[in-house]
Image 1: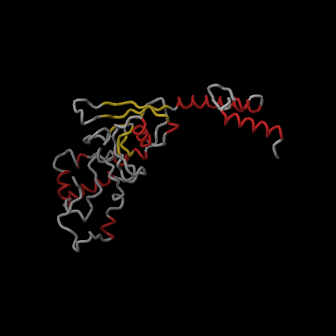
Image 2 (image 1 turned 120 degrees about the vertical axis):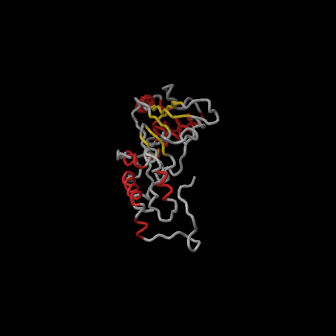
Image 3 (image 1 turned 45 degrees about the vertical axis):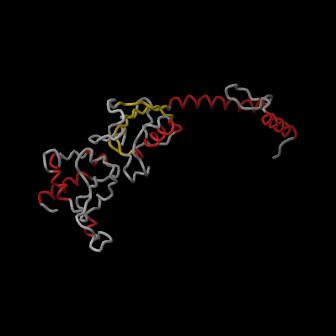
Amino acid sequence: MGFTSSSKRWLTEGYKKVVAGAGGVLNPKQKRFGVLEGHPVGQDHAQQAVQSHETLKDNIKALKKEFKIYRWNPDHPSQKPFLKSYFLDLTTCGPMVLDALQKIKSEDDSTLSYRRSCREGICGSCAMNIDGTNTVACLKPIDTDTSKATYVTPLPHMYVIKDLIEPWLKTKKGPPDGREYRQTPAERKKLDGLYECILCACCSTSCPSYWWNPEDRDDYTEERLEALTENDKRLYRCRIIKNCTATCPKSLNPALAIRQMEAMKSRNRF
């Protein structure tokens, strides 16, 4: 169905007004649209747009979320660590806590420091404590309840470098042919359920469980086991609470690994 001659004339005149700036610029604050004056249906649509705009603004205000983030700067050692509040519009932010941190750093406070890399739960770089739970920020959805703040702090029991931020595997000799360390299928199978660890440290900040003790290509297993058992505060202090298993973002079982380490130590199988 085509336009009538009067409709075409109305559209043409309106377009000219917009181009010329003769009262044709749509300004929601003025609630006046020169292009649509004298056209009842157009005015109705304009009013609906104004009302929707105002409703949207109200909704945006209701979606302001507070993030309380641990701050400490080593350049000012006399200043004690503190929690700083940031307010974000969740309608313009990604769904994960890491998205919020990225937005704060890029738009609000460039001094905020934290580690991140893959953004897909692969590398473990962005591990931190969020609302009391050790997890990786890229896999932690933002709590959209705006009545309470989200707390973001460093992993517990670790030295803080700044804000939210020695080789472990070692060998005593090189590979036989100078090219690579070979494993048999049986040796590799020992690492199933452990090798998927992304080194985020969510578990190790709660208990001393590490995936690499069955690693046959490493020569320092005995030294690490000795370090874990040199006093009562390490390996044998575990009470199988399984917080480490509950907090693992890769759904691994560090508690089982602790039991296996105890068995390795008791059998002296290094």
